[in-house]
Amino acid sequence: MQPFNPQAHASLAPFAGVEQLINTSVLGMLANATATWLGGEPFAVIFDSKPHDGLGVGQFEPSCSLPLASVPGLDQGGVLVISGQEWTVIEPVVADSSGWATVVLRRGGNG
Image 1 (cartoon, one colour):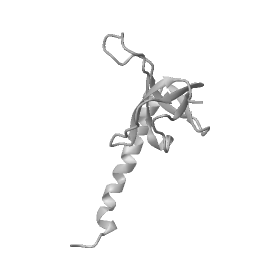
Image 2 (cartoon, helix red, strand yellow):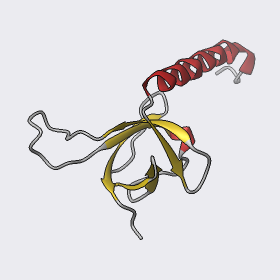
Image 3 (spheres, helix red, strand yellow):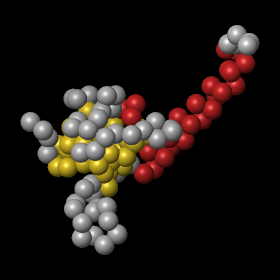
């Protein structure tokens, strides 16, 4: 077994920079709201306030797509402030392969 050689894997690092650039560009084009987490700095999010079923007759459960780097530790029960309104995360937060998540929300905080 060969010892770990960081120089052999250095070529992977540039891809992370490209991925970050793409994520930032996508967010810049699609963001439609601003959020804060635990009183921190505002950041852009993609907020969807439409019902999640195809017929529009189901329970109203808006969602928010965001880079998890902006909300370290966010999980079910966490509260985001989106465009001045408190929203509670009502399902477990699961990151995709790029570090983003879409969280399902309910209006109001938990306290």
